[in-house]
Length: 112
Image 1 (cartoon, rainbow, N blue to C red):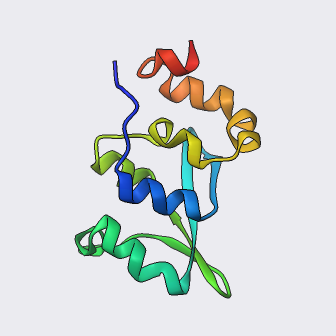
Image 2 (image 1 turned 90 degrees about the horizontal axis):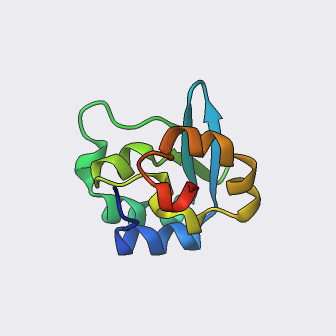
């Protein structure tokens, strides 16, 4: 059984920035909205190596970018569930069944 654990610097950054959950095809996706001026801090936390090779896909808006977090979580041996408290309750409840389907066996204490 996986335990809930987070990378402290990433967790603090996510708590200070808007995070959202949404379902894409058959998986839950977590993303964070990062203001352009905060991008160097984010890169410093996740490491510049995360952007090497093919880079990462983002959605760019006028004054921020939306960055998918799943690969970062997985690279740390974690998941969306470990970072549950960075998402607002509405987002979590709205996606609860999909989250339970995807992560329920790994996190029975959360979805029991």
